Structure formats: C-alpha cells, structure tokens
Image (cartoon, rainbow, N blue to C red; front, side):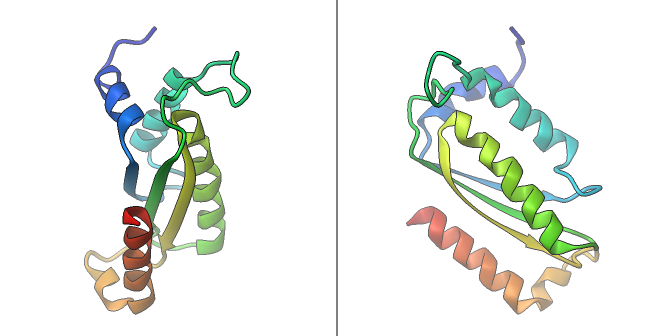
Length: 128
C-alpha cells in the first residue's frame, strides 16, 4: 500500500461525474506527472470483478486536451486515446481527446481556429 497525496483523491475521483486533463505531450508520451497519476489509479483495481474495477461509479466522462510542440499529431492522438482508456478502471468509460499540434510557442493556440473549436467541442461534450 502506498500512502501519498493520491490517497486523499480516491473518494473524489470515485464520486465525480467527469474529469478534464490538460497536458503537454513529451517525447511521444504523457508527461511523467500524468503517467504517475494514471499509474496510481491501480487503487481501483479488483481482479475479482469482470471489468477489474471496484469504482463506485462506472459511467463517468474523461476529456483530454493535449498540446504537442511538433511531430505527428495523429500518432500522438493514438497514444492519448490508448492511455485514456486505462482510466476505465477508475470508472471513466467514456472519453474524448484532442491533440493540438505545433503548439510550441506560448499563446500560438489562439491563432488556430480548428484547435480552439475542438476545445469548445470537448468541453461541451464533457458538460452534456
């Protein structure tokens, strides 16, 4: 058993309706802090359950909006979606993600109408 700050978040995560993740893409992966957070959701694992989850709610939404400085946005999108699926153990069965590419200059996202529209769509879906 690991005793850290995540322990206090478990009831909050279990009872929430939705979660929004905003993060950069580093070296084709989640940043280390987000990966550590994802790894700690093993607290919801229960191998006696058919879906391996002891989450109290299994109908939650998860939205992710990620920023990539450069590189193949389609590859990053696949990585993000694969990793977001792993949050199903904590009850997040429905997810949506967007990766904004070429976002290596602070504020540059404000000039990208498609990425801004995607942010609105992700948020609208999350709140619906």
